[in-house]
Length: 135
Figure 1 (spheres, rainbow, N blue to C red):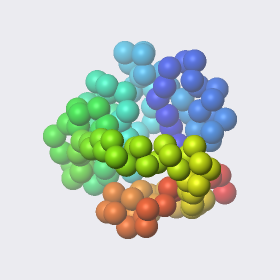
Figure 2 (figure 1 turned 90 degrees about the vertical axis):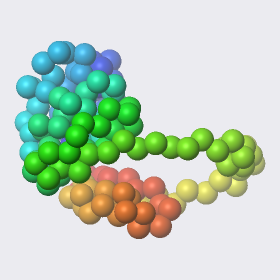
Figure 3 (figure 1 turned 180 degrees about the vertical axis):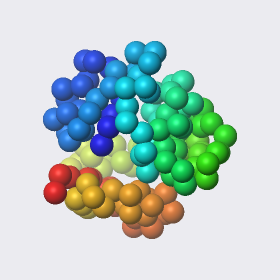
């Protein structure tokens, strides 16, 4: 996995399993990344256009920052929005405070990442949180 982040976050991301961390503050960050990715998740504003050429033909790009570029080369590109729900957040906060909030993550080897991603985006993950780990 390659991640873009600030230089201050690089060590933490490498510790979490990133093989490469590129500083997105560098205006030429995308030229320093080897492309051909199956998917890109955009969480830094104004980086989606630079990330699109790094995604392989037929891949996927999802932006959390409302700047998904138009689809090209068979790449599915979309913006993901989360609808805030105050009642659900209150319920989750109450469960967390009471110690009754249960999460059932599904650890998977990193090699299963593309299949896991496909299950999540198609709503077939069964409500589980998927955690990719080194094999």
